[in-house]
Amino acid sequence: MKILTTLTRWHDGLTQLGYYLGCLALAIIFGSYIIEVFGRYFFNAPQWWASEAVSYSLCAGTFLMMPYVTWKKGHVAVALIFDILPKPAVRWAVWITYLMGFVACGFATWITFDETLRQWINDVHIMAVKPVPKYLVSVFIPFGFASSTLHFMRLLDWRAIDPDTAGALGGFGES
Image 1 (cartoon, rainbow, N blue to C red):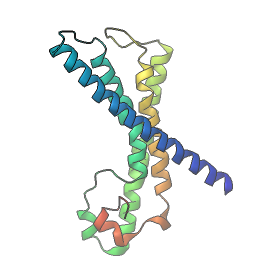
Image 2 (image 1 turned 90 degrees about the vertical axis):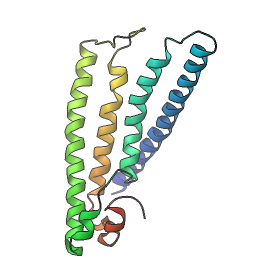
Image 3 (image 1 turned 90 degrees about the horizontal axis):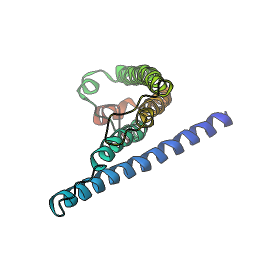
Image 4 (image 1 turned 120 degrees about the vertical axis):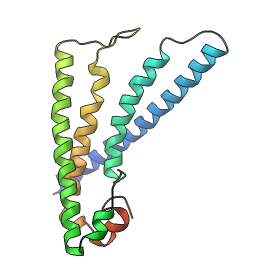
């Protein structure tokens, strides 16, 4: 049981690191846009790298942040179903929702990992001003899905699902 607790703490730490790196990616997007706008319109010197930095940072930031949003149950939820269902059925509905998230993210992990591996094996490059290996950008996608899969798996703990707060929070979110 101690090893499971340690692995859980490591996963939470990795998720928090992803959150901070996602925030850094957002800062890179913001800074790149500012530099591009000032360079283009005030100095008549557009930057070749700004558009690429924004695109790559958007991909990385999204999938680095995804596990954190899953962990904190911050995803969008339509809570009406949890208000309509009788209390004993709410726990089942929330659990099935988590199970569907687990299966969907697991399947997406498999597909995106397979594609990223194909890009690495075939040395596929992004067609841009400065071509870069595509797997360096897309590696964040299977990471985000895999980590979110683990978080959904951890949410499947039947005892941790509170049917009394499911209507207010849609079965999700922190109280």
